[in-house]
Image (cartoon, rainbow, N blue to C red; front, side, top):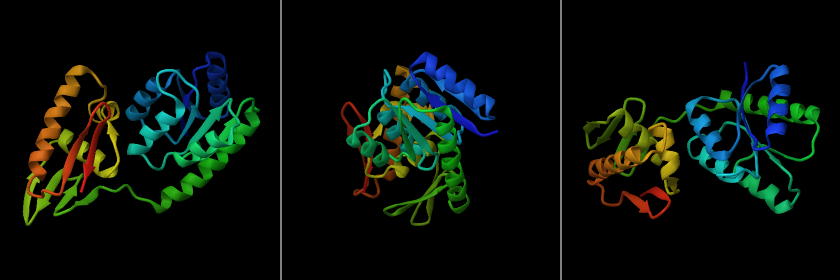
Length: 227
């Protein structure tokens, strides 16, 4: 069954959409704000996401930006009460596949998500998940959890590998602390945040043989892998 993540803070509309999509044969998981949606996204795999733009804690645009840090392919449809051209363009720049302005009919939403799913399934057949990365003089195999340089290899732990993979997937781009913690540790508690700092230090040590490779601290934001 196709699985959909629905993020909508209006309880009436959220429940109505969830029930409608379920009746139409889609397993639909409802999140009531952006933070809850991100937590649910990293815990399970989804075939499509529907994000309301105006939500508490984390708006739909910010949510989509963080989702795209680790997943470039899962389709996203935005729902919004705004009809401004600038908002629509921002949504598409963040990787949206479609954009619907409230109010809309259930039938139109269904038709659009079915069209988006058909397009994404064709793309999936052409794409494979990338697990091998080149980082200056290093070769990193995320699946085998091995970092190699000049014939010497370093075996990484599962968390070291997952964290480095996330940084490689977003090379040159900021990765927020909250997102990295939820992706690798499952939640963003204080204890896990301190643990992640230790792992970042370990990764820097592994990569220090190439001085042009840096894992930068971005104050109040997160980290960035730079070469």
